[in-house]
Length: 147
Image 1 (cartoon, one colour):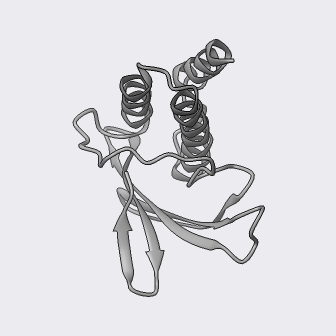
Image 2 (cartoon, rainbow, N blue to C red; image 1 turned 180 degrees about the horizontal axis):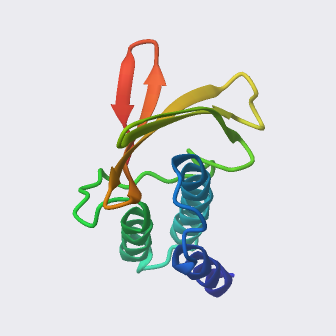
């Protein structure tokens, strides 16, 4: 099982980014994040002694695929239910202005449909390539960074 998860993770992370536009990149990031979360959670559940280092290594690969190579990310947070999932998170709006873009999404939990989270994916265009700067959780009190 663990070997299959590792192979699946590598396939997702190593695939070339299909299109360089913020909306498509957001969808691909969501998919990659879900794969990473499920891998990290499974390694943790299996009591794998290398779980922490493998989770961090694969998260770093995910971040480096979409963000600037010098992006400093926060602590790792994974669980039985991923914070981002292509089955539960949809793009609701894309706004591009010059070299900045914001892609807004809505995450609706499939098990608890009253749980809804809103996110903003902030991108910057550098040398013709869109890079993810930050993902914010949005609520009535403000924006909270989540990478």
